[in-house]
Image 1 (cartoon, rainbow, N blue to C red):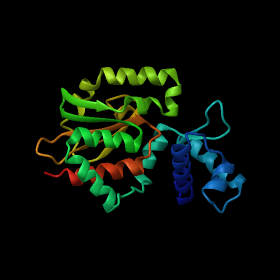
Image 2 (spheres, helix red, strand yellow):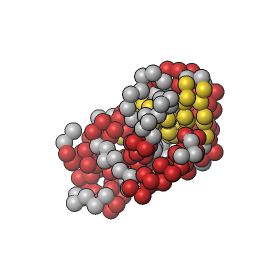
Image 3 (tube, one colour):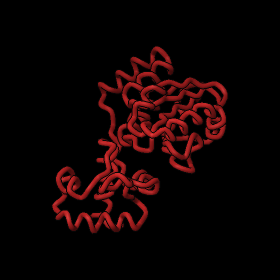
Amino acid sequence: MDSRQDLLLKAIVELHINTANAVGSKTLVEEADFDLSAATVRNEMADLENAGLIYQPHTSSGRVPTMMGYQYYLDNLLSIQKLSETEEQKLRTIYQNGVRDLAKYLVEKTQLASIIAFAPSDFYFTGLFNLFSQPEFEDYKMVLSMSQVVDSLEKALNGVYHQISEPKVLLGPNNPFSEHCSVAITPLQTKDKELLAILGPVRMDYNKILGLLSSVVKITKA
């Protein structure tokens, strides 16, 4: 893709992440401050749609990212937000009480669910209520899908526990938890080598969450 389409896709993904709404050409011109006409933006959006990176939900004239669009964004367009020293110090203070308190704090910060795996069959899961409060879970099928995720956490963790060596995001068919959701996951640098995961809908703030995970790895280094 050319740089203009990259910028448009980045804006569509981030506006959708922030609002949970489909994104139209008028919104892009007004909110993303593009020096382009709405007609030009519509033409570029049509190209993005033809490439399989965005699609039009039935109930809206706007567009939302496809799984392929999110993956392209993750591979090419991220601008990870680093935590301030003050925020990192707060993480250190919370971590002094143990990784479970750290997991609870991450739930509070992200409004998603958090998992600490001490081993494939020994894990701590918190934040399900926050997760179900996300707009995606107004769809009963998503609630059902996430319920199945909870029931098969041990199996999913078994599949990734020894395969994750750095912070990464697993989407769609690459996500052992569910192809309908997303997980940001990292090993911790503790003596016991726990695994930390943030579980949520595909529409999650990856810049913020990967920044959090990078800082968590840093402050938990044994």
